[in-house]
Length: 276
Image (cartoon, rainbow, N blue to C red; front, side):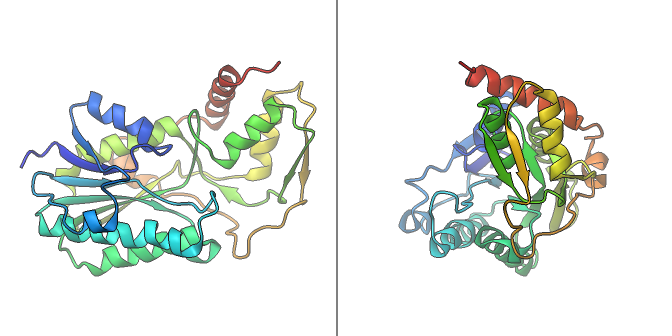
């Protein structure tokens, strides 16, 4: 088994399509699990003996009209079978892209948290690296911040938002990519069978302050932000931020300043969809 051989899911998603070329450029041998080969009847017979690691990025947020059953199938049933095949094939590592959101916030979060419980239940049958992602944003992303930036660039008359008082740990996509690369390059240094790596800067800021910062960078906009026009989701956490120490210990010490990251995102969006 070549220790550089990785089976990757979610290669066409927002994170995967940026991470895939980065990994190839740094010498990893990546095999992409396509949508066709991800069908359950194919997956149950998948042979994984040639892979040292599985990198699981595939996810369903429920933003395209998927129902609860479909979300659960993508975020729990599919990766569960994948882990079972990995264990049977003698794969050494399963790297999972997780969420920092609590289970009660959405079907997406509930299914991701349920899968994490399953990973815990394996009792060391395979080494788990569970990467818990905070709110990442930036060029190529489709997060709430990216959508707000697009609305402002388009001079959308009104943008209805929640109170914006909830605080989040916003991490620039370039730092997320670095985090995954650093973790993969340090796989041999993990001693625990279940390892949780928070992916965030360790700092949080209110959504309202971030939106106002975006407006500050685009002073000519006529967009009005209607804070409080939308209700917070039931169970919305007041403050979410990562413990940055595990990443710092691995070597990722400096994170992109939020203002710099937002300006890079704005420039990228401006180039992609220039204003008339």
